[in-house]
Image 1 (cartoon, rainbow, N blue to C red):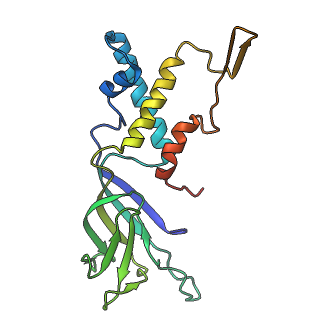
Image 2 (cartoon, rainbow, N blue to C red; image 1 turned 120 degrees about the vertical axis):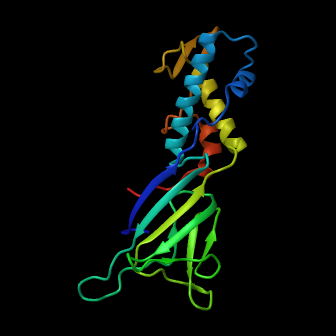
Image 3 (cartoon, rainbow, N blue to C red; image 1 turned 135 degrees about the vertical axis):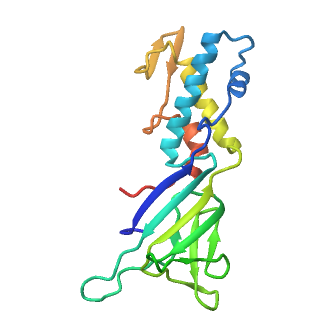
Length: 217
């Protein structure tokens, strides 16, 4: 929707944005009897790693209720129709359900009906406007307001795994110089740590790349 105005409001935020649990991380690290200090440290790492992953993927995985206001381009001064959209790409997906879609300016606001006025591709958040024959049409040059629930009922297993791996990496590196990239004691010890340009290890980004939402600067 290049050139169209979009305002996204979170109506009902998730209770937590952590992408894994303390119990799962303890099990992955093999920590049997942690101290309260260790548990507090791990809890902070989980929250920080989850925030890093959300930023990398440009999305929120937990289910939230969203209101999205879309303002298509109007025709230019010459009357050439530069506005309208072949489809609406919602900012969040997958879409769990749509509470309502309205179109137009007050007092002439129309509530659209699923399968009559629009169709949804939930996995990618695409909305298609339908004509009187229920065939895909262009959206009108009118404001559209969509209220919907997006996200996952449970964090995907590979995302949780990626978060746990990131926590493990940061936990084991807590006493190591973060600038260390290679260390070598001939015949005794050698170590090198590979981090991608994103600041995340390659095995983590490999699991997350399929969830990344593209951002146009």
